[in-house]
Image (cartoon, rainbow, N blue to C red; front, top):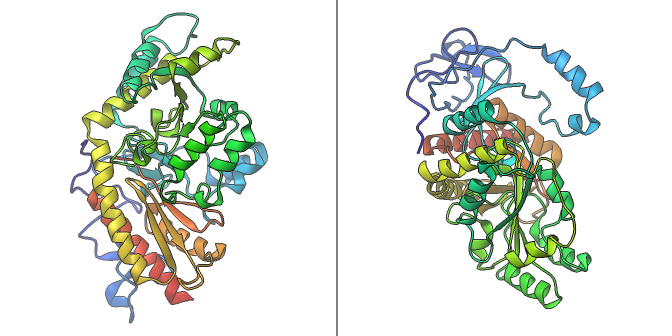
Length: 427
């Protein structure tokens, strides 16, 4: 696995040794009052905050627009939804990323456990993938599939080798939003569409809360029903594919089912905008009866990047790392579930984990949004970025780049434990 961190101190927030990164720092940042407090100067010192694992990468200083100007443009010139989905009361202004780390405009480092919504699969600016992208940028950015160029054929062959028979035809590669719209945005589709949506969108799936836990044989029974009604089964591997679940390269493999079509995006190209559809030769032939053409489908740059991602997952053993670190996280989070009344459930597989928060274990009512926000903000203030989801926004989503280490996991566990404890003490 690619080693990115050493025991050197990280970059400074204050111009000297960063108290968040240094094991020798004699002061700690008091998140409650926002000042530096010497331990000996206060009667009741604040809790010793968890120390972020060191990293030897040095980000470039930010020299762009002011934060106020950026927010002004965001509010007035961007889609109004952009502000609605902006995380945190005090937003994080990101400047640079490297592997599992993100730096804000002030030089502060964060452990990224959300990975651009489970998209940065092999790490921010992964050196291997970055080098491939740079080489391809100098050779050819874009042409279309009306010509024959090697990148799409090379990628199609490589991707097909990772899928079981008869899923061997790469029907298209395109912008993820385009192909999800093409199939109606649901997990599977047939004719009539409604039948399949009733199967795939059962309340038991808990929406996009992360780490969906299906009832036993749920997918198998659903697939059988779909096929009985003359439909086809489509596995949506947008979040679960490319080794994220650890033990299987594709999520459907963990349920002993074989779909007729697989849609994929997010981790496919480590954040480069791309999606793909793989299907059987028989279904692919049926598309040939009509006319379908995508200007950006098979883009040589996208295919080169995606091909490098597959190589990186294999050669840096990231799927194995997903299993090892994911299992450790699930085990340790289960201990916190037993410790705290407000942690109702911990579920997931590999590095796709959901932590469901409740008012109490007896009622299992969702923890209110304002309480979720407190824990969420506290976790960020201590240096860890996670996501949220679930039907009521009550599930913390943990979907980091697959290059994270056990030391990173320990840091997150310490931070999350402290954030929950802080909330329990306040309430």
